[in-house]
Image (cartoon, rainbow over all chains, first blue to last red; front, side):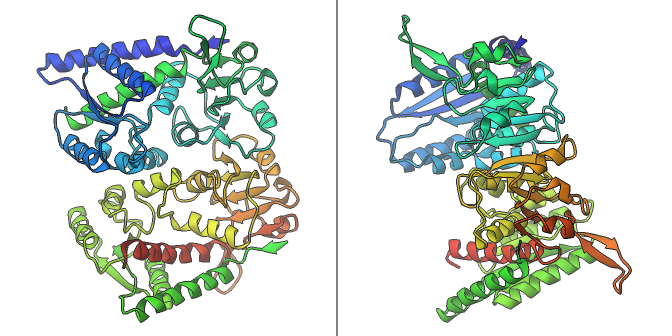
Length: 291
Length: 291
């Protein structure tokens, strides 16, 4: 059994990006620049944006966080996005979700120039990804694909079961892994809350992507000997330790890892790959635009 | 066994659309207007565009076919699209494919204003469809969904196997039937040329959508008693009759229909539904824009 070490791989990728940034700067060009909009003061959002700033700093990107009060109107926010869309100094633009309740997340995301939409949430990028065209793929699926690639996981002709149909994980994973590509060419099955016999379906799978958000959903009796298991879940559960909680995936790691050929740990698997995927998208946007 | 009579249902829908158009005109407003661009003189394209004109005429839509020689440059074609995008008299705009070889179909399709893209081929519409947002769904999947609806086919929790992963049929069907919606909420499996054990996978399916383009691929031994079978294939094969050919679907109709609960015939199933779906999209575009 091989642990798909997202932490290690993400550090390797960061090094690669940092090298690229060095050569950009050595050529006298400005570094890529990620701008993040943060409206309100949600604690988790603060943490995520903080991580993104730290990641940018680590690879040599410029980063700007634009903070707005909870009370910002949708109109003000949209005009800010219009301004950033046409600002040549900004390579990639993301809006940290959730937004205050009076603002339509949909309208805000659709206002972002698809060429700067490094979160890959704009319908145009989703459509391009689904159609197999060049696109910004959102961070979690992009990170998973990259992780599979780095470990040379075989995918062609494999039965792949995706647990979950969310727009940010399950659905893009299904579309990506069924593409005529590598990783891809899987026979994919998408299961969700309405599915019957999930246990039997999983037991036939060569590859399982668990993205239900149900802690320890996938048990050993649902997994075939030698399966590849990607655990996207990450839930805080109470624990008797210093922090008072621990992070639990959608997979019963101890028992499933005894049967799997490859498996992601939680934490340290998909999480760090998600973080580094945003950097990769930002670099891609920079390279596409010539700066 | 019930025949899913696309011919009959499409006529019913055309009547409904014609009624709506009558009331639009009675209110003193202009009728919806479909514009089709036809470049070159491909025989099949001529036929398809002719059908579309006829259909428009039947329901009271205005229709315009803009014909260009094979030699039209991409630049000229794109500027024509820009003009039509901003022409308020045009409700929906389609470009008949294939285009002459020196023109990028991708660039042409992406030039169409997504709000007039009644073929649903623009990445923004594909993305919106995948995300479950209001969108123009392309004609074949839209027609199939409508047909399933009109026959009240149960879909929630059903195992649905999609044969084929094309951008115009297999992929959108997979995304639509796995949505939290009706028709939808299926556990979907997408099979394609790289899939193994297609026979075994089909034999477990409650619903099969055959869109491989392989004549008579699906035989009775691959189908469960009581399955719903949607045949998207339509291939001309030589025959000993007056026309010299007959139209054959991806399903061995005679033997499969003996086991199916519902089945589409070829011709007269998905084909007419595809035609009427374009009219429905054009009406939708009209209603969204207020004209």
